[in-house]
Image 1 (cartoon, rainbow, N blue to C red):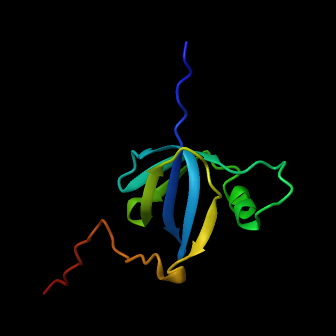
Image 2 (image 1 turned 120 degrees about the vertical axis):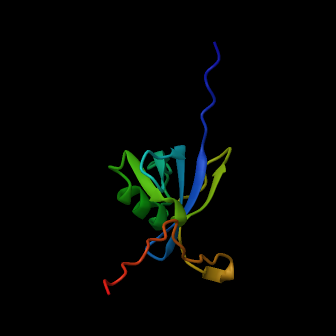
Length: 115
């Protein structure tokens, strides 16, 4: 009997003006309109002698999170990958490589005054 292949995804999204890059085992559409659902976050092993403070910070931030719901308009990219890299936070627009234009999926109709 063969074991099912474990999938791994690299997810990049905007959060508070920074670009988060995380690795997760499950990514999919959410039952909440306009969100994607991410679960099974993976981080480096604690046994490593060299610790990356950024990855440790993300590990602490997501330590008790079972699932995270990310607004679709914040997602930059989702890739299925073979190996996990380092989770990191990148300043938006750093090195001019990534620029995120803000937009909204929803365009509410403004209230019209009664005349």
